[in-house]
Image (tube, rainbow, N blue to C red; front, side):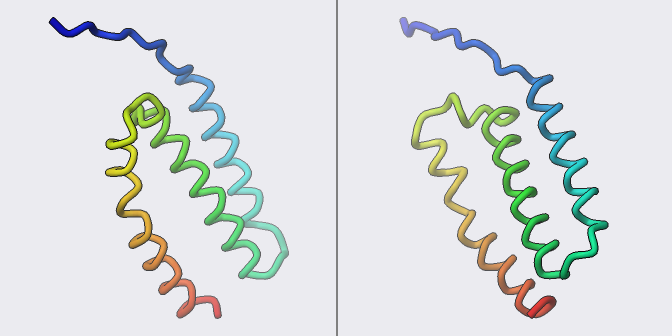
Length: 92
């Protein structure tokens, strides 16, 4: 029989509060009188940070094996290419 390992659950409330704080930063940054390019780059950085928090804790990737992590990370280069393509048409 396989032994089941019991892992401690992450502090979901702390992760939620972190996401809420990052969202508040995004709202504050969106209304700053900076250049559009700077604001968009900051907002993309914060969005990536929030996506990492969701993936690591709510999707439990932090506690999975490397195979599962690789499967989750594999589509990211395509997402980066698509975001860069849209940004080059819109900003630059």
